[in-house]
Image 1: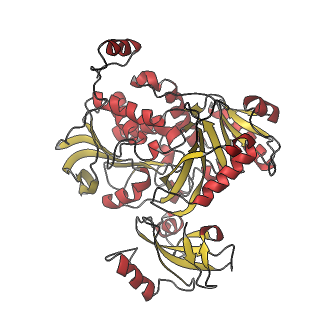
Image 2: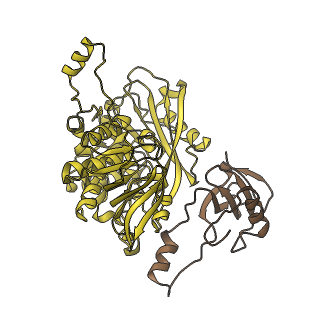
Image 3: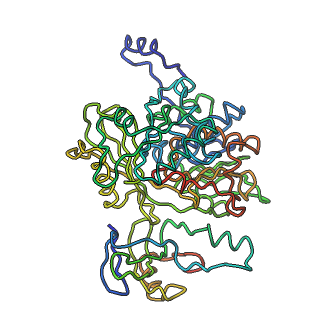
Length: 414
Length: 109
């Protein structure tokens, strides 16, 4: 792998950019790998990367049905924060946020991490109490957040309307080191680093079956033939249920559609991320100037990668109340992703009933921010059989009543 | 936009009139059941990419609960039927078979 640097850009400029090489190889699958990861999204690639980097397991294949980073990694609103209420959530999301800080240097790939600050508006008395509680919990967890007044909100976000028609802004939970990153670059950067370690990223190769012997995984069947492995990681978000069925177990997950949209590009007007959970919408401004907008999920099972129009309408209505200046903005694009939701709205990172087979899924509507932490924990779990980061997110927590209830703690925009 | 015909009031109700109620035909396990049964009843849900049976409520209409058979991959609706039944009627199953030969859902087919 050629190192990316200012010097490399200058060198290539002098020879008409003829020396750039492909960022990752696209090899044919080998007969056997030490570990196979199914799903080349952010979480899958990060898992492979930390398997190689932290545990020296480099005979790894990442198998992808479509193209890498083409699922929810390329469909989210790129928000990074770790202001969660429950300890296990705060631990894994803060690990991820911390890794994002110098991920560009680590991967030698500019992921454009922008710690511009994330603000979650409190617009009811209930929300004030909730967010103050979260900020106190965060103080104990070592996550830096603070409760700020409406005046400070207005100072940070001059375009906000504090006295909206339905819900006034009463304050906010503020995480200064939260922000955004370039979502595609996260997948591309991990892919390039994995490929440089000698890992095989096999795109357009669908897993059609999971092979096992005596209750232990021995390989997978794919559209490019059978591949043997010692360990298997299933990291496929919306299609976790299908893969689990092939492996012979069930997951407490349901797949639903979550939508996002972006406006036409405008001049810089908001340099923080604002989430308004009571009126149900959140917004940030991309480096290109587009307002990136997200809202709620549909309430029913859906695999179509498109959502219901009335949800967009509700989201935009809420944001126009909060930011009156966007009322004349045209929307450029709208899209949907399939998110896998668990009962307690927290992910599953776990061993499975099939030995040697591990699952990482159920991230629901909030997976992007967790990518490095999730990969770090999942790699530790796959390599050593135990990880303090993932312990609380095991599959048996439902039977044992150990929920990590972020459905209440995180509100709606999660 | 999803449009379901309410089997009670006969209205073709669009999504904003309806409230989704999750998986249909769940068998309740309460006191006296095993841990596994109670766990499955509370948390395990069918999550098919294809034919699915669900409960819906005509919330901003007649207010009644009913059942719908639907494809989660195409959003095609195969039919709606009464809530007062523990499994889909034969004509709904036939309607699905006509469009999705070989379909299965739990122990139905």
